[in-house]
Length: 380
Image (cartoon, rainbow, N blue to C red):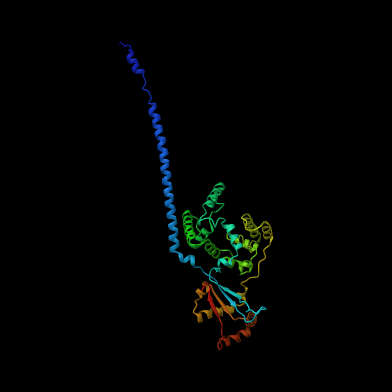
């Protein structure tokens, strides 16, 4: 077998390698970089367009929900109050003021009050606690939401909320209490619409008249009566205002009646926030934080004392004025009677005697006592 020795030409062909196309490879890498860069720019532009579109959809959705449920923002149940307007003059020669003897309601014990009758410091207590940037944002505080998200991520749990007063009003009036991303988005859209339609003062007034304060008290005025026995909000002291502002976060937990120590601690937080934001001085904070809560005598005791009289008033309102029971219990009427409280108490105590009660029942069949009622509806 003969093996031929390769020639130099053959050897060259076999050992020569194809040169790598270095210039072509570098050119390809440069092309990919530019492609990624351009793609990033396009994606950013599309993201901005999508964000704007979503924002517009959210805003329009909020207005749609608000317009289709406008009756909810303007309507709420309202307690009816019954007064004794006794004859006579005070030491200054003026007519004696009417005295509240009973409150009747169905479901929610609520009394509304105009923003001008809510002391500025009381308003500040709620703003400082619930929404410090209330007068600056447009219904939704994106800065607070971002801060809350950062804290939630750090603590790996929902430790702080970002809801504004406007959002809380939107949730209270239009939505359920479920915690979902969709519900939160809807809440924000309605908040934007509310801020566009109503003034800050109007939003704050509606908020303070609607929120729950515990002990079946809805609204700031009903809460002031329940916890402090005061119907005039201007009579509230700083520590009382802070106590009320502490309640919306957890009405049962921070109730001064049920948990006075926890209530006092939470009040201290409210006062600290007010001081930090310049609403009160440090001396005022210290003084208000030190007060111990003492529950007032029940302001609803009159309803028990004059139960039979109240029943007659309700019957008379329906028979003579044509006001149904459901309307009377939910539409905030103010009923003024000519009842003498002392005489009524004596009569009811006497009537409670079995023998006298039987005699009076027989007399009731023959006689009907004359009535003098003056009925007005709140806001009429």
